[in-house]
Image 1 (cartoon, rainbow, N blue to C red):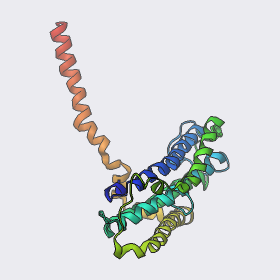
Image 2: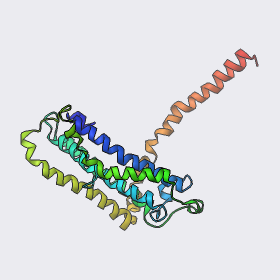
Image 3: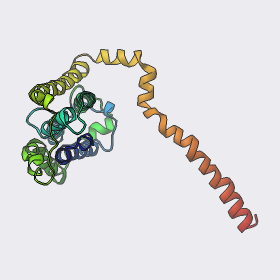
Image 4: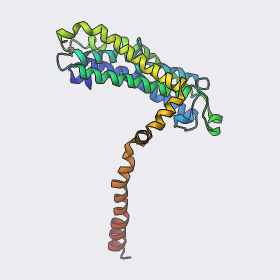
Length: 262
C-alpha cells in the first residue's frame, strides 16, 4: 500500500507476489509445527525443534530470512524497491515515509528471528504430551513447504516491476535523490541484519536482559500481551449485553411469554 501511495504500482504487485511465497511458507510451516506438537500453539512451550522437524525448520528459516529482507532472497528485492520509491518517488516520496517503512522492516527482521529462535532453538520447553507427539508432517505438507521455500529464494529474480512497466510505468524519481539509491540499499541491508542480530543477541545470548526489560515495562508488556484487551472490551460492551438481550428479552419475553404464555 505504501508503494501504491507513491505511484509505484508495479512494485506493489511485485511485493504482493514475493510476499505470497514466503508468507504462505511461514503459515504452512506454523501449521506443520502445530500439527507436529499435537495442537500446541504457544511458542513459549516449544524450543529445540530443529532436529525433530527438520523440513519445517529449514523451510521456515528460509522464509524468515526472506521476510526479514536478507540479500538474495525474494523479500529483499521487493522490499528494497518499496523503500526506494517511498524515498525518491516524484509522486509523494519523502524521507519520513522511507523512515517509517525502514523501521517497520527492521522490526519485522527482529520479531521473525525471535520467533525462529524460540520455536526451533534453545532447550525444549515442551509438555510431556507434546514431546511424545513430535513428528514431521507428511509429504502433502512438506512437499509444498519445499516448493514455497524455493520460491521464497527465487521469486525476487522475476523482475515484475520492469516486466509490467510497459503497462504500469514506474514513477519518476526526484532528481535530487537519484544518487542515493545505493546508499539506501546498504542502509536497508544493515537494518535487516541489525534486526536479526539484535534478536539473536537478546534471545540467544542474553535472555535475562529480556526478562529484566519485561519486568521493568510490566504494565506495557501486559497491555501488549493482552492485545490491548480488545477482546475483553468487545465481550463487555457487545457480547454480554447481546446475550442478556437474547436470553431475558427475546427468549424470556418473546418466546416464553408472548408465544407460549408461560
